[in-house]
Image (cartoon, rainbow, N blue to C red; front, side, top):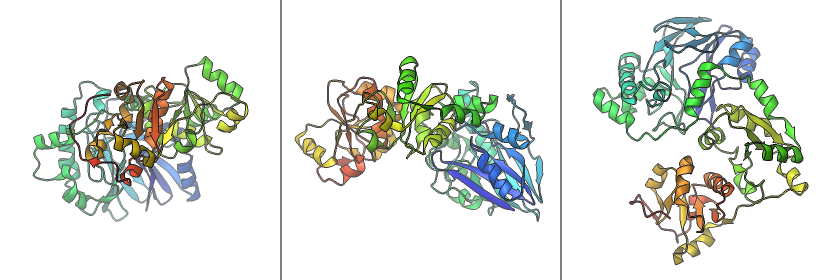
Length: 473
């Protein structure tokens, strides 16, 4: 038996390849499915099943394309949702034979109502591995407030109560030596306290996971899992619907999205449509020159998640600027979170635009050393665009928290006529923030190179734990 985790750091997502005696199953595949097919072909195996732990919210699964290309059925746990493609709705306890092993479906409603785990029973009949989806993470459990975005009567309290029962009646009675393989790790918005580890024994989780403590009452559990939840990114409900109804083939999306546009064609499309221009180069390169009104979301980070957070509609038309050789990567990562309407890429990249003498823009930047001199004089209004939880843990004294993940609300904190120095942890998010506001006419924002990491190395900056918010700008 072979179990392989295919972990994608950009989405903090784990897909799984399971194989026994020439037959394979894929669990929670990503949008681009060819790597799974290649993996099976390399091992002379046939993909027999595609198992989905639930209708995902944070990414578009590759189940539809993978089924079309392999003929393997798509398996879900019990659900009343009608899919827009052929699917098999399994029953609680149903077993699927895969080579010499069996995979048992365990219905575990709570994160969503159809959420299910898949238990591997090996060749000797021993229960060895559990694919938990978003029901159980390492150090956490799935947030129970997402399904209500699609089905209003499913309150987060109801779902949390279901999750309590699922964990105690279906998961905790299983053997301690079973290996837990979750769908996500630290960094995913599907939970709030996930470990950096991506696997663990169930026994260790019973000891260390706050949600699996045996003496926890239902009321205490509900309160614990609901406390501290922040609103999910706006693209989540849209991805759920795509996963239920179906979507365009990834091959068609890539063909359309990677269409090369000359600077003249690019400029024409940008001016005649409402397309958002995303510049995927790193932030230090972007700030020295870019197409006016483009926004910077670098591929060298959680690109897909930030695109989904900052662009409210997955149907939004998009134009892409990328470094040579990374064009397809950009389109693929956008498609992973449902952005299928990429209209093309700039042929030759930003250099071609610049060489053809089109207008360019820049972002002003300052080092932590130079900013410290202004800070000591009291002449620096500092804007911290990290998440509220990060800001509360530590921040520069007198800084204003304006989180990037709520950029439209944060924009209200900024006075167009006042110079502000913008930072995040390292510079990735602050450049996105500045580029978005600069496209909206805010011209007095200066990016702090190196972010808080650089500022902490300078003794002039006073770093403090959370204090009551200061007045708005």
